[in-house]
Image (cartoon, rainbow, N blue to C red; front, side):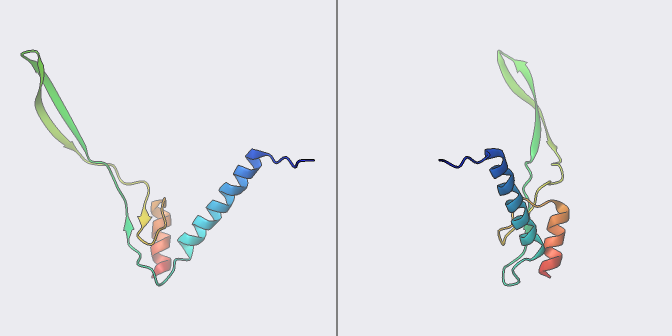
Length: 94
């Protein structure tokens, strides 16, 4: 007889354990590690074009301010933190 396991229940258990591990890493950082928060945003440029002599020709270029970052990482390896979690992580590290 084979034991069948609900794949959704297995996935839910895995997600719960990953969330718990993530929260533990945020709230209990290793004091020996370096802790600096980083984030990446994509710079945007709006480029306008005119049509001249059968080709598109750039007519103007405007740099658009990037949005505030939504996810933060720490150089110690904790990834995918919100701003509040990153704040908590640094506060706990200090």
